[in-house]
Length: 164
Image (tube, rainbow, N blue to C red):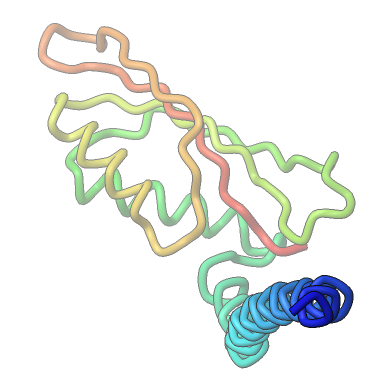
C-alpha cells in the first residue's frame, strides 16, 4: 500500500496535472480556432461584396454627382425646377466652387439661395432639394420676413458635390 501511495504521488498526480493542463490548452486552442473561423467568414463576405461596392461607388459618382463642368447649369436647373414645383420664387442665387480640397474624390459647389414664398412652399422646396437625385447637403437654413406680410424669405445654403 505504501508503494501504491508512492506511485500515486510520484507518477499519477503529476501526470494528472499535465493532462488537465493539456486539456485546458486544447480548449483554449479550440476557442481560438472558432474565433478565427468566424472572422474568416466575415472577411469572406466582405471580399465577396467588394466588387459590388466598387460598382456601386462608380454608379453613385456617375449618376448622382455631376462633373465640375456641368455643376453650375445642373444646380441652376435643379433649383429653378424645384422652386417652380413648390410655388416659390428664387430671389437670388450664388455659387462658389470650393477648391481647397485637393485629395478628396469629390469637390463641393457651395450654393447660396434666397427664396420668397409661403411657409408650406418653402418647406416643400427644402424637402425636394434634400431628396433630389443629385448629391446635395443642406448646411444652412434661415427664415426671415418677406417683402410683404403674406410671404416669408428663406436663405438656404447647400453643397452640391461634383466630380473634378
